[in-house]
Image (cartoon, rainbow, N blue to C red; front, side):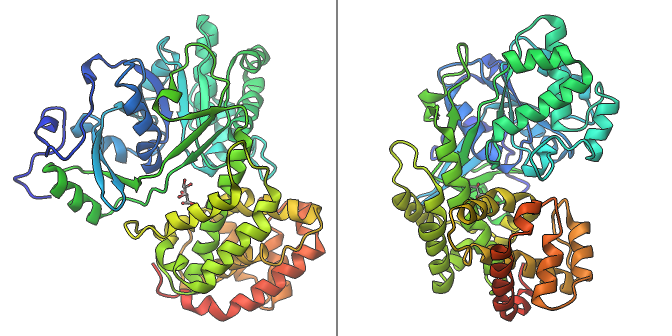
Length: 487
Ligand code: CS2
């Protein structure tokens, strides 16, 4: 950063360039009504933006952001009084300083401050973006009682380390104090995210106190949601761009495409924030939106990530510009995925699919395939395997749907050959599989399919799926060598 430049903060923000949109409310009057777990880039690009707009009309919905592990966000935003710049990338990029995060807590450093926020009467919502793995679920989608964090938290529920542990401890304190529960809003890309989280929270609470579990079951809302906005990781180019545009130094600006969508199941009830007033869709048909987005956008993202990396591409823009990959993406959408979906009212699925491909072609966005390739073991079950299961049940071919899965296998193999670790909670297990591969398609595919945390037994035993995988895997072998050197 240029030393002469002021750092973004409450004191300096009003000196920002007039091009920049500033919080249009008095931050001193804002109360904290939301506790958010996982203030990564997606939260700061998406939910924090909606609350920033909501605060213009209702000061009760400031955010206390809680990091469950690292102090990075607190260290960057602390000196900035929680302020950061959001760049909305479009033909004309716009810049907005977001003021909705009033406090950042690092849970392991100060768990009592987190409990105090969770138990405060003003706290009405707990929201989460902790990625798929943060839900601590088994492959079947139940609370993973063998997960080290859950083992820890069940043994000492008053000193949690997991998101589920914190949510239950907060609810326990409210139950004991005679307060209403908070609503818990899961904002990650999991099918039926709110339901799965509710089941996990209740299973955990049952072990702590069955009366607490019954109270949560009866009183707490866990809406399912669909969240959408493409948010590439922050890089130095963004920092420099934000600095030039705002005239202020920001240690951790955020970028996303201009498009953003948030669909929330309409179960929050009286006293909930007026999310509809800031563009959130409240509906009783969230599943239709969520399945369409997860399978079409995220499913194709993961396909482009693994197949694209194998072909030597670095970004989504490059991958979707490769005619063979674009054709694969479109065929998957139109022929394989859409037939498994039920369109929610008002959504034209073929047009939605085309609009997604258009978003991938946004030249302003440099979205690294390697970022999307993270955590494949957690993502692929929701993004692709659900579609595979539905296609098999309907008696349709799964030949094309096997391509992204086979590409993931080849990606794991190529990374191991280069000696590069993959970012995945199952990385050790996957590496052990790769190191013991027999080296021919049939045996290799069987070895990958034996990872039961990813492939349910029934799917792994399906001959049609097996044959399709074997064929796709052998075809992709040609490209696997190209992965070497990709970012
Ligand atoms: C992406 C998502 O990183 C990934 O796995 O598929 O983060 C995607 O960009 C968002 O879900 C878009 O809403």
